[in-house]
Image 1: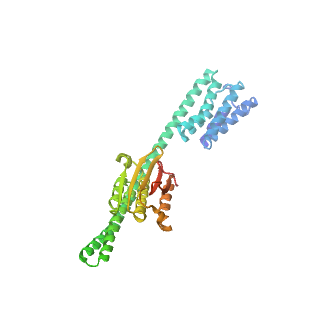
Image 2: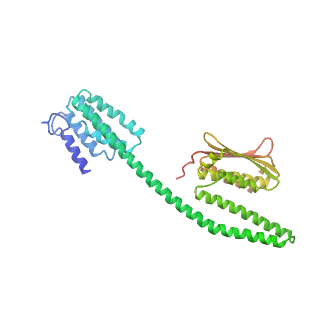
Image 3: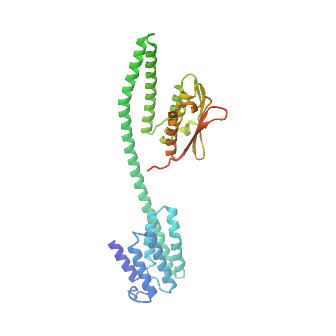
Length: 352
C-alpha cells in the first residue's frame, strides 16, 4: 500500500503537461487537477476495487485528452488496475469488464503517437501479467485441492478397511453359525430351521450392503454388480429383467448418483417382494441429455394393498433423489402393476 501511494503521487504530479509542469495536482486548469486526483485515487484504491479503479483511471485519461492536456505517463492508473482485474476474474468476465475502458483510452490517445504506442504497450503488458498471475493462482489451488482430495480418499479408505474388518467379520461369523445350526438340526424343528435360513439370507444381504457402502466410501461403487446381486436374491415367485446401458456409462457415474440409483432399485424390488408377488419386474436404466432415468415396472398387485406404513420406502427414495436435484414419481400402471420412475441429473445439486 505504501508503494501504491508513492507511485500514485508521482503519477499524479507528472501526469499532465510538459516536463516543466511538475505539479498538475496543484496547478493548471481545474480539469487537469481533477484528472490527477482521480489517477491518484485509482492507483491507491486498485487493490480494493480493481474494476472501479480501471474505469476511473480510463475516464480520467479520456477527460484529460478531451480537454487538450498533454498526457505524459500514459495513464498508469488504468494499466495497473487492469492487471488486478485480469488476475482476479475469469478470462471472459475480465474481458467484459476491461474492453470498454481500455478501448476508450486507446481511442482518446490515438491522435498522439508519443502517448498512444506506450499506452497500448502498457495495457498489453498489464493484461499478460494479470493472466500469468491468475494461471499461477489456479495451479496452486488445483494442487491444494488435489492434495485435499487425496487426504480425504486415504481417510475414507482407512474407514472402509476398519468397517470391513470389524463389522464384516462379525456378520460372517453370525451367518456361519446360523448355517451350522441349521445343518445340525437336520429334519427336526422346521420352524427353527426356516428361521435360521432367513438369518443366513439376511446376513448375506447385509454383507452385500456393507460392500456397497464400502465401495461408496472408496469411490468405487459398482452399480451393475449391485443390481445383479439384487436380482439374484429375489424369491422364486418374483422374476426380474435388467435393461442397462453400456458398462462404460455406468462406471463413470459419480458415486452418489450410482448409490442413489441402486437404492431406488433396491427399495422398488423390496416393495414388489412385500406387496406384489408373484410378479415380473423390469428394471430399465438409460442415460438422457439431462442425466439418468430409472424406471422399475412390475405386473403384480402393486403396493396399494399394503398397510399405510408400507409407503415409507417411497418417501425415503424420493428424499434421496430430490436431495440430488432429481424427481421421483410412483403409481399404478394402466395395464396393471406398479411403476417407479426417477430422474437424476448428471451433476448432483450442491448441498453445501
